[in-house]
Length: 405
Ligand code: OVV
Image (cartoon, rainbow, N blue to C red; front, side, top):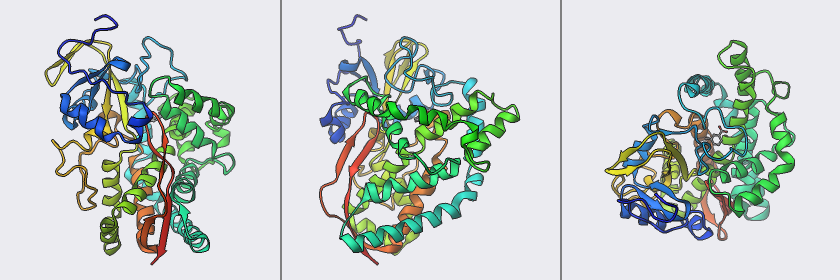
């Protein structure tokens, strides 16, 4: 294939999924790709794309053909140098991936996470005390700044064992990391410039002496002491926590608040039955998937849904498009907290499926539970604004009027 011709037998969809226009409203572009075929070609980035549920799932569940060690973003690490040392869990394949994954999976297992539940719940309740007080005082609050950012930024670094100081650095870092999975565009350049002064802080806070002796971070070092991973791998796994654990949950919570503000009948159902908090969060992940895309690279020539893909090609999976594929979901554009959307792709699928999903779900459940208990009505008091990111469906502001219960 030369540089100008599209590959034969693949529908071409000439869109730019990294343009402002696309990121502000990705759904028409998703539909265009889904309707064009099971696998499409996006010429601007010379990448294959899967936007239907079946093919996204198929790619995610074949880690032998669709590898991660060449990067989970657009940059092919076999041809271009990674901008930072590769993640030893996200950007790795078996067998390297396997032992490292096992360490994090144990630290973040459902059983382990029951240990933090009470603390996370108390923090959610305490946060709502402050938010409702602020709402009473000034009429409106910001769902991002006053709620969605504060909660993960408190509970997750606490659980990892990080000190209180400098945590806001994690926001800049997460924004840059998730931009880095896209093209090397202006959006990435700007976020990289902003993060530059705090990179040193991030890396130094992955070291053992910066971590409390009882947190997730310390448990990584204990696994290294037992020889399950090397001492050099331990700070790299703390780095993965700090990269993947904050901006994701912030925007998962932000998007869920937006869903409920936009769907008063669904909020009413949640208020009537608070045990719907968990499915309401899950449905928000389907409806507005926080992580929009991840990439794989073909390790060999393959066929996907009858489409030939050569070796060493990048394929982007549109997780959020899979989550609104009408081939998979009845009435996919409807936010319905009774849906219980098992099989959604917001956490990915297969051996790289989100290792922190138990913690993410806990945070979402507890915030929506506190909201349902404390608030009678949640309404937008102005237009929300998006923070455009190459990978995340993120909010900059979410003006809310919260009427106390
Ligand atoms: C899933 C994810 C996102 C971002 C960073 C990482 C993982 C990491 O391992 O660094």
